Amino acid sequence: MIDIKNITKSFGSLQVLKGIDLHIDKGEVVSIVGPSGAGKSTLLQIIGTLDSPDSGEIMIDGVDVRRLNQKKLSDFRNRNIGFVFQFHQLLPEFTALENIMIPAFIAGMSKSEAKKRGMELLDFMGLADRAKHKPNELSGGEKQRVAVARALVNNPAVVLADEPSGSLDSKNKAELHQLFFDLRDKTGQTFIIVTHDEQLASITDRTIKMRDGMLEKETEPKASQDAETDAETEMPASQNSGTEVRTDAETGSESGK
Image 1: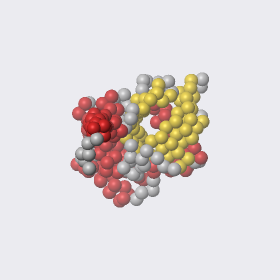
Image 2: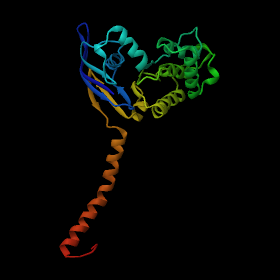
Image 3: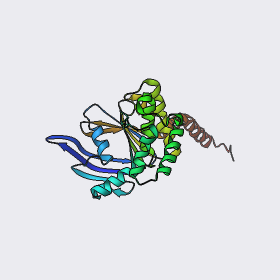
């Protein structure tokens, strides 16, 4: 799905990314964590084609994005990548539904189709009755869910989120975090989330840790950890079984024949 090889990025004399190699599978929910200044947001912006690396390769869904000219890159970004930021970035003069429809219009979708798609997403978010409300009439959690719907309107292959729950209270955080997994299960999209929220990082499929512009280590996917735990739990029984077989052989027993 996403393959990154030897990505570097500097701002003046400060090297922010120092040779990043990373692979992310389709349908993964991946968190990127690390201290401030580790390069997390810079990496996310480069994956999202909002910024360019100094060197390296970026493949997204089989497309080498560094080979695209600006127009093709903009089209690719609009159709294949959704963005969710810490602050919703909704345009205050437009309603919730209109905000969601804007990326669809840029992609060339008709008004009727964009409206239908927008209402489907609002309904999924539990916000169908808030479609005509402007941002100043929505709660913080509602604004962020509208922002997620806007990121999804063109059915992108990947959704990038930068501290998406950083400005929310505990209840709205939990609801937003669950929403990411509900969406992945429903649509099969890939989510890459930069976060300082330990609770969110702990429930993602994989956690990538960054420090000083480099990948420090990754936690194993939850499924692998569960499988390893199950194997360890079953090991004593297997060892006991092996002991019994050896004992039978040594005594010449023909049990089991």
